[in-house]
Image (cartoon, rainbow, N blue to C red; front, side, top):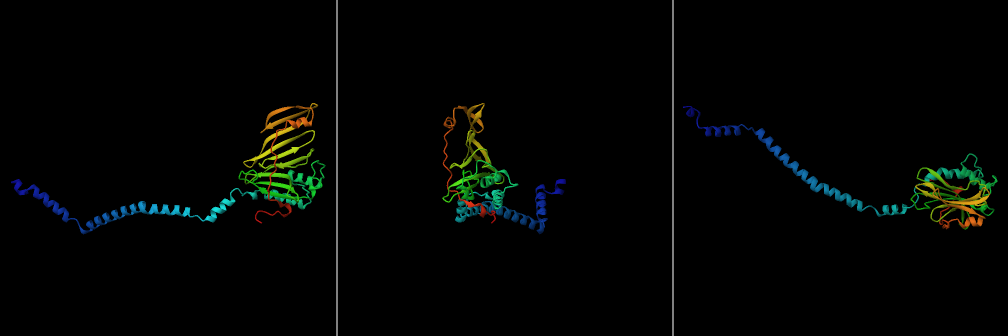
Length: 287
């Protein structure tokens, strides 16, 4: 009787399912459909973004880089190897120009400018005063990468009418600070400076006692490569040879000719082709 009153179990299940489906309101159905549609659109958008848009943007950027104007690349090639840090020497050149305007009265200037003043006025009694011929040469400067290291050097020199020159001072820079590679300061012995074709600088101080020093510029700083020096020591004429500050050889000699026979042979070809400008016409980089 209990089974009869309840009816068949299967029919009750089917009836419950019909009731649950009919209970779904149109609003719920609409939300389900909207969710399905939005999900489909989002997935499609992601596929389009990663598979079509991004590759197209990447390809356009590569194409634009390849089509960079030819003149830009030509300008970069023209600038390659050219000194880009000439402005670092402005203060030094202005100091030389002011000394020249004052008749090479370098009072208060640094020692290298004072040395050049002594060369022109010969008031210090130094033995390294310029010759009568060189005194008529033009005080000039040139800024160039003489050792091809990507950084420029400043050369201050007396320049003759035929382009021959006598360096008075040479400077190097790391792009900001300026260091003295060689300067013809007043000396008890005649001294000469030679700027060589390989960019090194040779300083020779001759006499009974003297030296020949070869300097180079490395990373904007002066470095002593070799030094050969001679002089009297306890009544004997002696000589010593150094490489990068380390003693390599030494000995005694009966005279200067024998001393110089021990001096290492080096290429002393001078540096050519510098673009000289008169110190009196110097202006700042902005001008």
